[in-house]
Every structure is written in structure tokens, then in C-alpha cells.
Length: 85
Image 1 (spheres, rainbow, N blue to C red):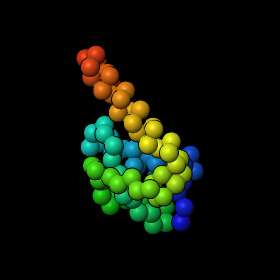
Image 2: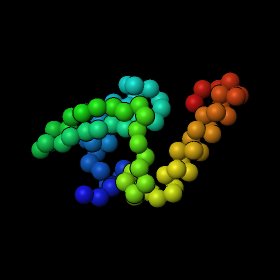
Image 3: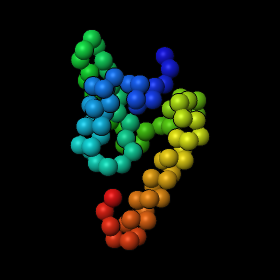
């Protein structure tokens, strides 16, 4: 088992993960899914997901942390300016 980029994951898996996370809010969530045949189901949503070295960052390496941090900084700046993200 190896990590996949979003562009490599099955479309149904990515769409369900995004739809599920967006129902919770607009933060950083971990969505645990299970696929059996053609069916993909949500197991749970984590509002404080782990970003374990060597696991979640195996695909993007240090770029993962940079991307997450850049998004947090962007949102803080928009909040400071009184704008919604």
C-alpha cells in the first residue's frame, strides 16, 4: 500500500471525501473511507487528523507541511482584512 496523489485516487473516493469534509466545515479534516467493490463508504471524519512523518507526507514530503501552513496563513490574513475565504 502506498500513498496516492489526489489525481491518482479513484474519482469516487476523492469526491466522497471532499463532500463529507465540506459538510463538517472548511478546516483540515481526515476522512476515513472504505471501498468494497464499486461502493465507497465513510467510516469516520477526524477534525484533528494526524500528519505522521513517513505516512501522510510520503507523497509530497515537506511540501505537504508548506501547503498546509500557507493555507492557514492565507486564511488568517483574510480574517485580518475582514474577508471570508
